[in-house]
Length: 102
Ligand SMILES: [Zn+2]
Image 1 (tube, rainbow, N blue to C red):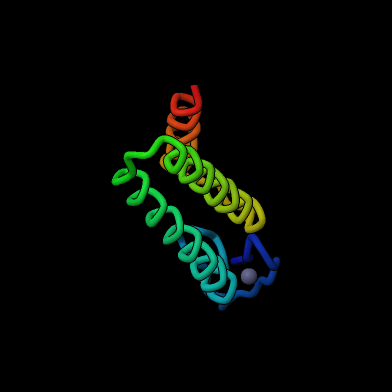
Image 2: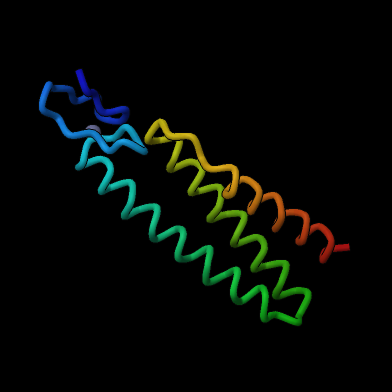
């Protein structure tokens, strides 16, 4: 019987999103919250790319790491596996910050 990985709701006719294993309500909530964080990451990434100031870059890298970790935590809250792409992104900006701080 289909069962939601987040709220545990189940039923023969319960619709589950194939790629997340969440019911439509949970999937919608996850997508909304994820979208906000993803948007913040993209904005900080764009700013970081344009930034020529080391101090500014460090603080942007910190923001990206922070939002990235929030997004990982969001995945965990919904019993989902964060994508490798996301983990790589966090790692990349962590390294960039460490470089810039030297
Ligand atoms: Zn659910």
